[in-house]
Amino acid sequence: MEERTLFLRQLTRTAEFFPIIHRVQECRDPKDDKFLELALNGRADVIVTGDADLVALNPWRGIEIVTALDYLQPKAERSGGLVCLGS
Image 1: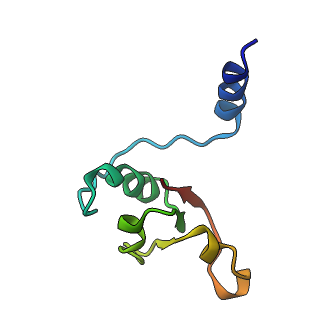
Image 2: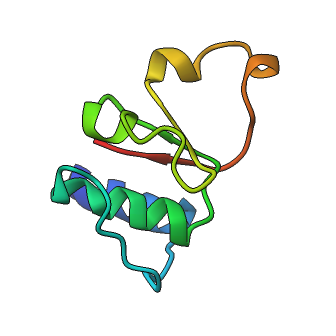
């Protein structure tokens, strides 16, 4: 079986899928709104991203938006919870 097929099968067993009920058009780069929609609809606590357009919104609707370096700070310095990865 092809590696990609195996990866997708494993991903669908472990990933959580969320319907997009609440649409978002708030990022200065409209292509990044999909990450905000996923975080909002999936009730994420944190978005980890290297995208400056998303980081500029931190915090957004109670969701922390941080770089990977900031995310790796000791947990006592940050809140925990569900993470949505952005581009």
